[in-house]
Image 1: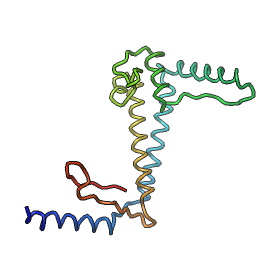
Image 2: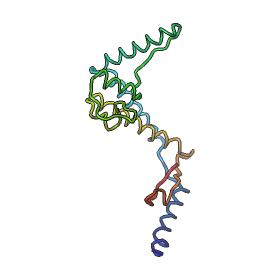
Image 3: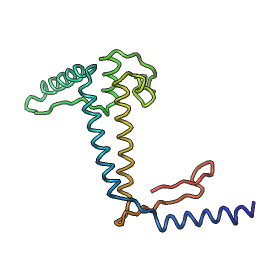
Image 4: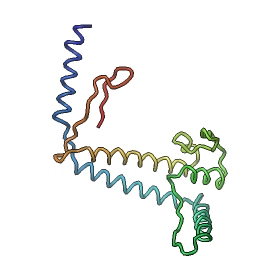
Length: 173
């Protein structure tokens, strides 16, 4: 055990220190180009969702009803409601009330779930929303990585030699 600590663990620790100090060069231009491409794909998926024959009429009526209800109490307002593909509540309404899907699982509050496990099982539109969500999540990672780069596009991760409960190494910002 002492031999392992002196040779293996110490050399790994030295590697972590070196990696944190020197950093890792990231191609900022390629990463920014990837972010732009991913953003375009997300916009396309959103448009594709909005024009799906199965749900377009439902979404249009929802937007019209919400806007009319708002204007009834705020007559001078110019606000127009748009269906929010990121809203679990609105997606729940679309899938389970408007489209008539049966709830597969429920949230802790008892409402039908539209999580990442359920969406792929809700037909073409559910799969489309799931793909949209996955790309949005990836975009968040890309944006976070870009924000962590120094002026020379070098990432200096904070290495944690014993970063998890099980003793595995991990890293962070």
